Every structure is written in C-alpha cells, then in structure tokens.
Length: 89
Image (tube, rainbow, N blue to C red; front, side, top):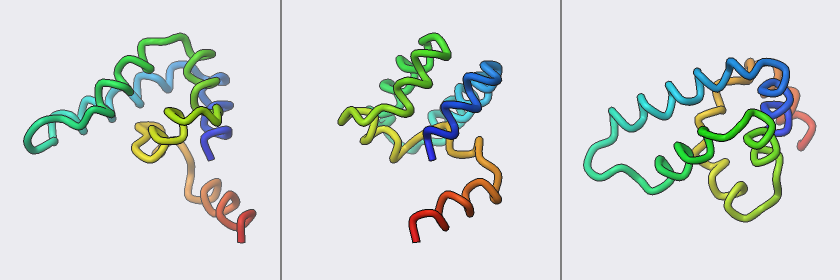
C-alpha cells in the first residue's frame, strides 16, 4: 500500500502539503498529550520527497511501525485500496 503511495508522492511532491495538513489536524484533535508518533511524522515530513518515499516503502522497523498511523492513508482511492486488498486474499 505504501509503495503505491510512495510512487504517487514522487510523481506529485505537492501531496506533502496534504500529509502535513492531515498530521496537523490529528494534532489539533488529540485529547491530552499528543502521541509520540506525531513528532516522528513531523520530523519525517520535513525531508525531501525522495527521502519520504524511500521511508514509506522501507521495511525498517520504525517505518513499519509508523505506517500503522500514517498521514498518507487518504492518498489512495477506494479502487486502489480494493485492488491491494484483493491481491492478498
């Protein structure tokens, strides 16, 4: 899923604005102290699109963990999500 998101990001780096906006909205809506992953994503989103795309597609432990709370999940259409889920059935 995030490999497709990484490709979309490389094709259109302006999508970073949307991811940053999503993260800012999550932070504003958080009740109590913000989860640590907010700060981790903020740091990652300061990188170049190529670095962020590489992180999204990475099998590193931190990348795998942070994909569970990704500000990029709304980048895929319902059709793209369905194709991905169908591939794993």
